Image 1 (cartoon, helix red, strand yellow):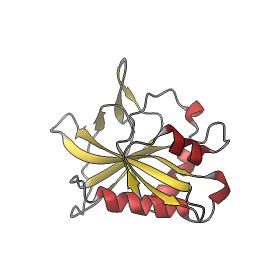
Image 2: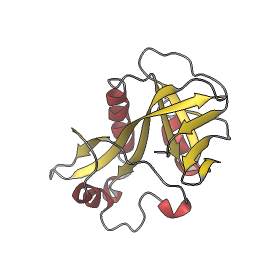
Image 3: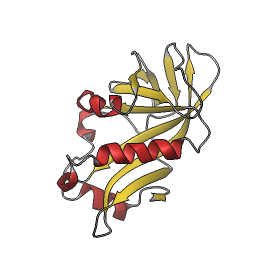
Image 4: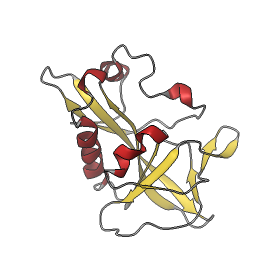
Length: 167
């Protein structure tokens, strides 16, 4: 299923009674809301997994702007974890990303989750990666990963700056 922004009701379905399912307490960053979402429903029709997408721009070594599809807010309902739904919702997000135009997908994650994305073909971007925050650009403390989508076969190189809040 695909839809726009994640409503409070849908977010509540995904979070359940977990206090901090996105581990937001581990970061002080201001995050960009995702404009599009893909999700999987359980047998009862409720959401069991979701991933958000947003169009963004980055640059390498201060050069020209490069469009990317940002992927973020990946979540699997606690009771459904360990069943491969994370992989499935990321696959669906990447399929959707291929229809949006940019040839690169980019994401941010905690170190303990990087393996999931590496198995999906994402490669770690060497730090520092700069992201916009209310006080200016700062190095992002999370792991930054990207992968080619669409017709692109190689990843560009250079120091990465994300123009806008991370996603």
